[in-house]
Image 1: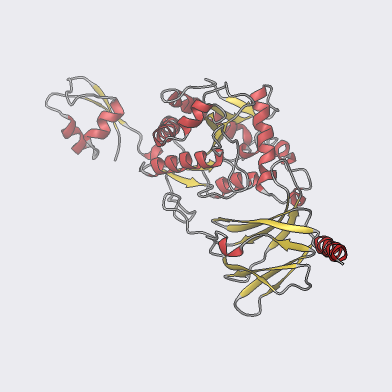
Image 2: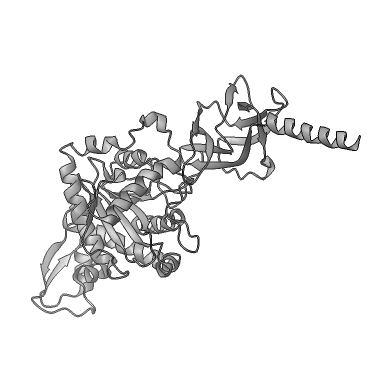
Length: 437
């Protein structure tokens, strides 16, 4: 009798296990300024269906996972999205299924699709909810807040969300480091009366590669700077570098690794590959055939040289000239662009350095200064840089810095900075550049 009961118990366990052919092992919510992504991590490919209940509040998106067990405590989910009020379970259509309900703030045209397993993640079901999902950070201007006649810099912090980028020996995620540098750069730029910054990514979420360039074009940016941290298969390489677009594939190992890393980025970030028809990067070759790319590429190259010169003052440089690669994030035909590798996160010493606020601020200021140097020399038409070109003044007897500042409606500090003066003493016949107010 005892053996019979034991066998019966095993049989019941086996039957119960067979009833659940799949498991929901994790749920992640990634709110971005203009959408929220919900990711279900599953043991095997999802067998699912969904429907909406939008007749009256609460508006609900209901997903049925067939023959699937939920292994997640929904009460412990972190949700900062303005679009999702609550995620809960409901009575399933049968005892071996799981029904998940997303209570939404409005009627939302959700996109639901599976993603196949890759090197870092298993099978996934993705829900994309379009709409304003987070309050934009104070250091990140909205499109509406961008003011005309200022030089506009679009800043792209690489990776984000499900795509951590490179991972350092201590477990540092590239996506976190570069976001801090990007925010520091935006803050410095927005303190400049002639410039303004727009953060492509202001939080921990993923933006598709094509969407990054599209956002820069939408705000009519004068430059797109994409910030990354390098990595190699061994810990020895160190130093920063700046990359610009090439119409040809990279001809060195570092360039090929960077191109391959970018290709994997959209996969990890959860871009719906069906929409790309497995030709995610075919658009690069089409875009760079556009003749308008010529100006954007040459301008990006010249600006990259200025940035390298400034970064060399605060960081070890891996390369002292701009490097070339066919990178999707740099393929806007209208916006000059560059990709800044701030150092090797795979090098233990540089990983530690990249984690310090001091070095992050130094890198941000160097990038800013290099960009500003270029726009001072070649200001875009109609910008404050173009309308505030300096006047030349020859010092005469009795003139002082304060007299000149009052005459030209500027400040003593501005005159000294423009002319690299260390004291207030002037000499008759001395030539000064006077910046306009």
